[in-house]
Image (tube, rainbow, N blue to C red; front, side, top):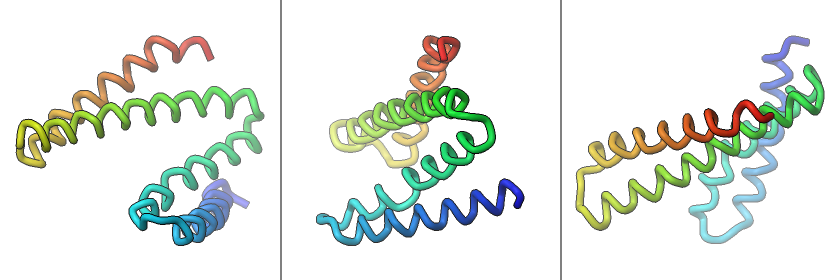
Length: 115
């Protein structure tokens, strides 16, 4: 079975499980948060473990953590620019993308070689 078929099946099952979980939680804004990203990450890690072993998957998981930290910084900056500075949404997201990129690449450069 090809990697894409396995990824499709595993991702679909995990997305469905997270969708059921998010449907049971309140507020409903959690539904989007739990909809795709965690399930795709878990499917990808499962395939990495199956194909390359747990050591490789552990190294890959760190890059996911770096991306999550960068996303948190991006989200914080977007909120600040929109709420405090009343910046237009497009401008705020473009400026904040630079923040995301700097944080993600900075973390990767700082800690990426240690895994």
